[in-house]
Image 1 (tube, protein in one colour):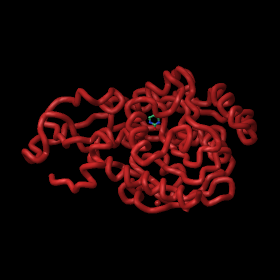
Image 2 (tube, helix red, strand yellow):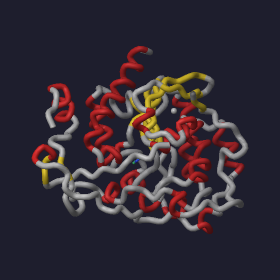
Image 3 (cartoon, rainbow, N blue to C red):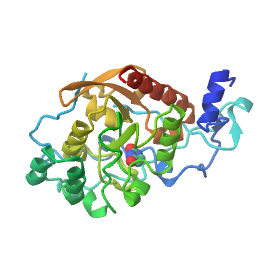
Image 4 (tube, helix red, strand yellow):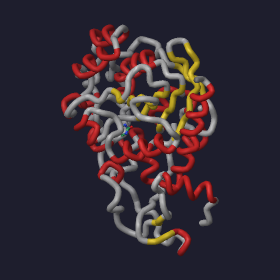
Length: 313
Ligand code: URA
């Protein structure tokens, strides 16, 4: 495929290089985190229990963040062995089985609200949120986590990125986006001139690692929601970036059933602390690791976020 000069520079800056098509086998360059994708869609694996699952901290309260466009990104396989331009795709995509089933119904039924935490988090300070989250035992994930993962960055960072959930590396280090997808995110942010921890704070929808890299369950997302709302309130971003379908579904609920591809490229708005915050939706970095050709779109999305920030500075 012929690239324009601009595309070529962007690809080079983001370490994309020539595009390779999978013929067989697993990509030795991808981490376990990404090899395990795609994640098991909850609805296709195990039906939700009809009753008895009660939600966590934000139960009964309206979310403080609300919006004014859920993606099911198609999995494409790119890996080594043969450059696109030399040959058409010859290998049929491998059948991809979910490697992990979602938690058992019994485990899910343990998601109970903790009214004490709910009340505490509503008025918590930035440091206080981390302390409350560290004590949280609302979900069974609290039994399997190494530690909770709250945020990278602090109030004062004008841009806030909302990701999905900690992976293995984040669970070990206690910081969001430090694994392979995190390194890619940092590279893309660098490419648009945004510094993590200075210009950009990062939080996740979930504060604990879902084992086996599975999708967050709806009740887990709901249970963590009060933490996310309070974090966003205190961060008071000038520009918000939602990475991946879980962040998008949580903060732009009207986007439910829509792909990231359809939602990205426009400026949306999420109300945080009574303020309408311009919001950009983009692909999750883990998706980009599996679909490197989409990195350029992601770069454009972050450029758009940077422009929005510059307009407000
Ligand atoms: N993916 C996320 O969404 N968040 C992280 O912190 C790491 C990987």
